[in-house]
Length: 269
Image 1: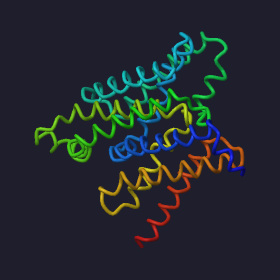
Image 2 (image 1 turned 180 degrees about the horizontal axis):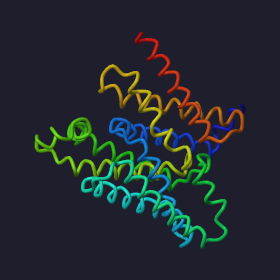
Image 3 (image 1 turned 120 degrees about the vertical axis):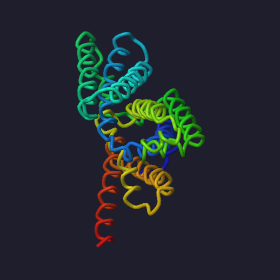
């Protein structure tokens, strides 16, 4: 591999994007794994098709509208989950199917968008823009500040919501905010790795860290390290063999997850 390729602007942007994305997704991915809501991230990604479709149809930057749709999805889901007798998976499945179907209807009325849509479905990390890097940086900064100020409340609400409520913690507010942050994170990551592979990027580092960590205080730092190392390794493989960056990253992170589970299974015998 020619090392000069690392001096090109698109490669440097891809590396920076991978770093920001790794830290952001590992941060919120931990709470997705703890809350056992793996289906939620996939649902948000598919529901965001409505925002992407509206953006392409109206000629507006699609991620802006996708973020709006993702926030609406998160609020609607959280509201109904607290007031409905239906199970969480049932609500997620119905609501995201509605958003996805509306997106397909809008796309059917839109012409000449196949190339643009493909970049959202399959990712384009090497095509990440300055605007998208700025979005990731701002979202990561806000996420770190929010969790630094409210970590104990968020953690307590996640692990034991009933006791947290009895202790005076606003569990419902934390649930809304976690789902909103997660939804925006999903949208910010879509353009980099694509809608199809996004869940693996969000879940694999967190699940790996949870299986290896001896204390919870180790889970988030370990998830961040695994995510960064996996993403950079995936990028190097992508550059070396001319492979899709997003797919390469997901394959590396998935292998790390599988190896960690094998190690955990044998180490506990």
